[in-house]
Image (cartoon, rainbow, N blue to C red; front, side, top):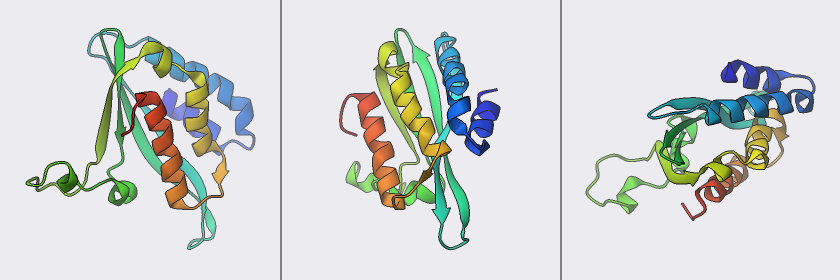
Length: 153
């Protein structure tokens, strides 16, 4: 249901009309998590692709799990943008894996995970065409992730 609602919101002529109901559904899904439950939420951004001369999307994925009183948000970007992630060799020199495709952010308090201002910014990246270049969009998303993590990533 969340994927369908976000998809409709993203492709709507006026996403602002659908955004409130989409945010409510996101909050409801997060609040409903129990035990080892998880939910998937789409993320990414909309932009104008100069090569194809058409609107395009870079779709990413959040996996949210609840552990006790806190949440873990795992940001998954295994596709085209994974080359922008720092090389794993910077973290572990002997590692043979070249890139980190999933970034878990642990210990997120409920108030921060359910911050609808944060979710509004995340969903607006998908709903409205971004005029900045790809690196600026990635930087904005990472700034949003650092806010939710409450620490540098």
